[in-house]
Amino acid sequence: MNPKKRVLVLDDEEMILQLVTDIFNLMNFDVTAVTSAEEAISAFEEASRQGRPFDLCLFDMTLPGNMNGADVLRQIRKIDPNVKAIVSSGFSQEDMDMVKGETGFDAAVPKPYSITVLQETVQKLL
Image (cartoon, rainbow, N blue to C red; front, side, top):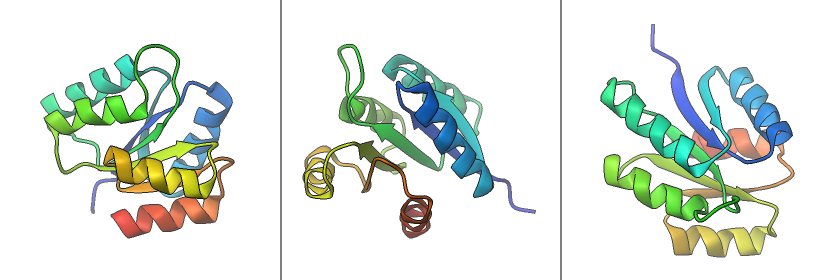
């Protein structure tokens, strides 16, 4: 039996974290949800140390504090340059595509989330 795919979700809004966690649970993922850049980096480092790396990351672009989603991705790619990453934000799809191109994310998913769009995006990446 294949182990579940693992996803790291970073968003500072608890309600959104719960919604995305529920969606990924329906997709049969093992979900780790965090609310800060520091927690995301720490969780990624720990998973790598344990030999249980994340298959996918979904990061909100705008976060409180000194780091945004792109900053977190840069730190994480130092650990695993090949991890698949999706950026998420309330920006328009056009703006999201521009952000994706400028920041190195593999895909962009706008908020509010569409289960179908998120599933299709994940399937394309994995």
